[in-house]
Amino acid sequence: MRGQIFNLAQAMRDGKSPVELVHMPGVLVERVRDHGLKG
Image (cartoon, rainbow, N blue to C red):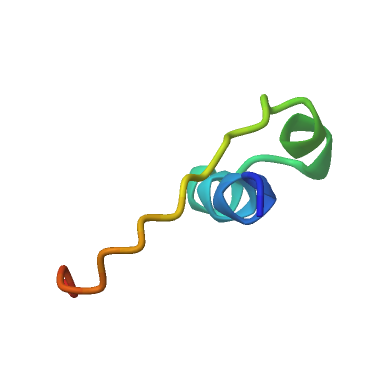
């Protein structure tokens, strides 16, 4: 997963239009395998 879902959630929070969402830079989401940190 790159950052599409993160960007979508951020855009919905910010009230961005679909056109603005398309122009958002991609965010690389790094998965951490440490399952001990469940907050």
